[in-house]
Image 1 (cartoon, chains in turn brown, red):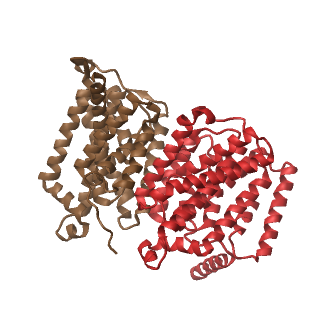
Image 2: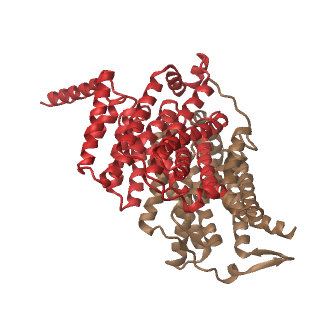
Image 3: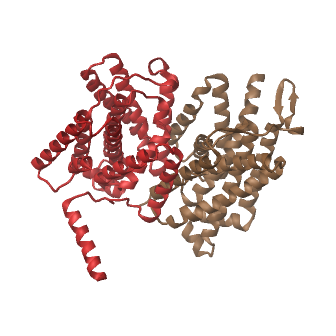
Length: 294
Length: 333
């Protein structure tokens, strides 16, 4: 039982990271119906920005977190303006191919500049190196940090989406873009803002994964990006609480498969879950069935 | 250049069927002579093999993505099935018949997996299908790496696979694939596939069983991807699960998109072009992928139809093109 609870703690920590990435996927999909393949790479850039802030600039964790969120937000907007905005009326396959192109460009561009070898984050100091015991369960300070930062960011996101004007605009555009435009909402600005928020969350996830797993490399975004996408689909793509639930679910499943089965199979299990959801209930856990109209 | 001429003739209307056959045979013989006189050395021939494999892969993916409109990101998965099947068979039965049996078994096995995967997933639309096929390819990779470790030698891969692929077999399989897929597209099921790409709902309203034809295109594509994998295994001695990852699927997609979704000759031309580029950039693998990335974005932004659009290379197209240039020059003067 203790072992199980310990796995749950690990699963929630990993799930928090997936949930942060999945939120960006789900918001972008909700608003322009695009699987933003480059999203996993924004997360990778977040990890690298955090790394350089903490090593070269010798900044603390929190300033590094803010800087990496900021830079990722700018990167997200840039990607949107250059690659996706001109294709607003193109077919979805065309935009998807563009997204794959952007993703390749960021991955290998980064590899070109920072070299392909993995780098390790600086060792944690002060309170972040500690761990706390509760009975026989061990919480590392990093896990507590990851979980609490994720919760704060999620509350902030809920506040932005539900209570602010721009959040209202986001919801309106994702519901019906044309109608929103007729109501005087600037669709382009709203889409850019969505990319900004999603990418900032991915940047946060990047630096959190850096302090948690300690090792980063230019292709680290591919698999977590895909898994976060699975999480978003599981919860119902386009639905923000769905992405959170999906993220924690995928994190838990992965940790359980590694803990009780064979860690080699964890990727296969996640993809198998994806295929099963897509076959059984493509709209996801919280999604509603929509009929296609001619 | 000889090769380009050879492979495009498979689907070009500028020659009568007999003329095509003569042109194909001529190309076969000329290259064979060049190889035996060592003008085409092993290094150049390896590029030929890469081109041949890429043509088979691109043409078969084009059938799924370009002609039927089903966006698949798992083509490398089918390739790996063909590669492993052929490798395992030829390692046991090291004869030409073992090789041919391996190629056919690999293709059939890939097609079989194509049915298993296609039936449930082809109900999905567009980007969902892309992710599902991607997931499928990852699962196949993990199967080869971890589950079937006893026969596939896990992550270390299989090496010392007997080499049976020579110019003759490469030529037969490449030209054969292009011809067969070209014929498929010209046939009634092929036209049904194209109508599904244009508008699935309208096609269904016209009485086309869209699931049936989507699965048919998917399975045919998987079959030929299996052949390509088998040739790869039999020429390059060595295969490992990581050779057939997401990266490989993207490589194939780039060829199809650059050549034009819905143009077989476009796929052939761009397979040759990209093979030359990647041979040239062999020592800078990162730069190659950066170029691929930029290429995808730039094509989609400025010429989403690719080099050829949905047209095929033909004499009349060439004529129109020359006339267009003349007219432009005339207008300028």
